[in-house]
Image (cartoon, rainbow, N blue to C red; front, side):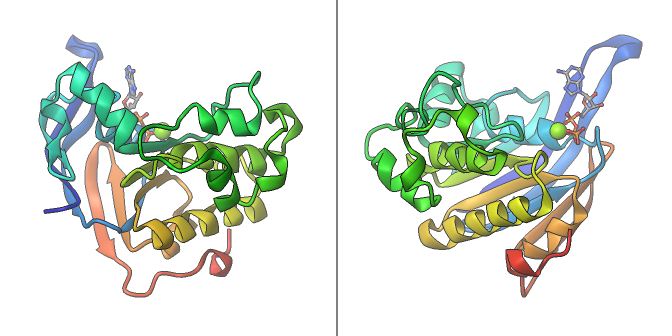
Length: 231
Ligand SMILES: Nc1ncnc2c1ncn2[C@@H]1O[C@H](COP(=O)(O)OP(=O)(O)OP(=O)(O)O)[C@@H](O)[C@H]1O
Ligand SMILES: [Mg+2]
């Protein structure tokens, strides 16, 4: 299948009586081009799942096949090229380089065949702010720079961990609208982790985690637009 196929994924932290099972046999499939929201309370394993899919953490069992590549079977060198070429990552706290301008923050993520940094900034509506340093931008603008940085290489998969968690509801709504636009314009497959259940309405697919297990997996036949959700 040309999307994301996760099968019996297991992740444990620590050992002995201190051991925590963060993912306890997680299985699901996501089609290419789908916008998936992953919901669940704090500690349910959402970030752990995203980090494994993003090749930033290893699994203790099961598999995670992303566009035909089993990331749990990759060596570290393969993971470096996977993260560099196939993935965009957006975090709650933006993780921009403070001493680089918005444009430079986007430019450092470019690779072969990627868009121009100005094109990526235009895509997120920040063409005019490229010369600003992050400290001179609002939270929403900083997140848009982070999204421009994540999409400049046109990755087939965009992983977002609480991208609206630090933003007010109106700004958060704009970020969701932007992600929906990118899904449409580039056919990007998007996985968005949040504990905000309201965001489920905009997704094509909603996966719910609890205590490291899947407790819900459903498809929205008519996903809402970002402007239609009440926070
Ligand atoms: N590096 C680590 N070392 C030890 N335990 C960890 C580590 N990372 C996560 N855990 C544990 O694994 C479980 C799942 O954590 P995870 O961060 O995936 O949850 P989450 O759903 O993202 O939570 P939140 O909504 O608070 O971000 C938790 O019990 C957490 O304490
Ligand atoms: Mg988390």
